[in-house]
Length: 408
Image (tube, rainbow, N blue to C red; front, side, top):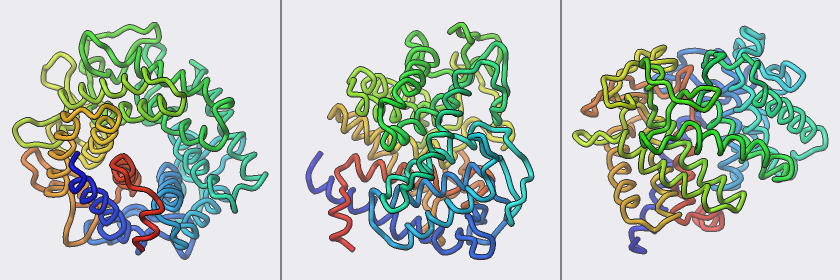
């Protein structure tokens, strides 16, 4: 990449995080009255739901800690992270290493331990938070270790059924459980060490790279059988999620770096190419919502069905995750293909998703790029996917904390 272009992109992504996206959240997501975070807002920032979804309490904690650790030692972000952690431990923790699913604004439990995804996201948030030395107390580390052990046990238990928004099956296992667990485990490894985390990390990498990813179809299936088989009988069996493919791709690249095995990273690069092939809208640009592994008319499942998603819509998170995957694949290989795909995706996202008037990104576009849902926070959307992807891009291009501090 030309040095001038690289410097320009590094500067752009830092500015986009600091000036275009995070002010939207900093100005309104901190619940001064009850603690924790408010995460549901319309386009202009009006509050639409004051419930505390524990997934998003954990995700917002992760983002504030991540930005403090990697982008800028901004005192406000540290205070916001502390507030989120305090609220989570006081109200969200169900005990015995598990986390509730949703609370009311004041912290009363509305739904309990129905979802391992609550455990994933809170655990990742706590792990990132505990990279900050002043909060890394013995008590807090004990909580992290307890929750990690419970998560690991449940991931290896075929009878563990509290996996909303997946549905437990005696026949199938689900891709998104393993990709989310891998992301969480990578963050935990950076605090707890590989000795404690490598077993689970390798389990997730194996499931993604050798079970869900299929070379004969060049896709990552969302469901495979517990005997490592592919079933093509129905739309759920053939369902392909390009957003999850892009996520798994860059998680594998990160895991390969951490474990020190290039073959894992290169599998991630290969999955990136597949995700681009199946997910990129060659006519209008951007990444589609979902596809059929055999090229047929896809039908929605799970989250896509619950949110009435059409296959050709452009949702914010798969499009953000594609940026991260292409940037890391280019850094890993130096292949100009990934640079060009990154630049095209960058132009698309900044033209269509970024709201220049009110900040942040729209939740959803139709196929041609017209805004279909302008909300900035929903029961499914907070700062997490977007800001994480922007930070990954910034770092993959060469952005470093020292540069950011000097630029303040």
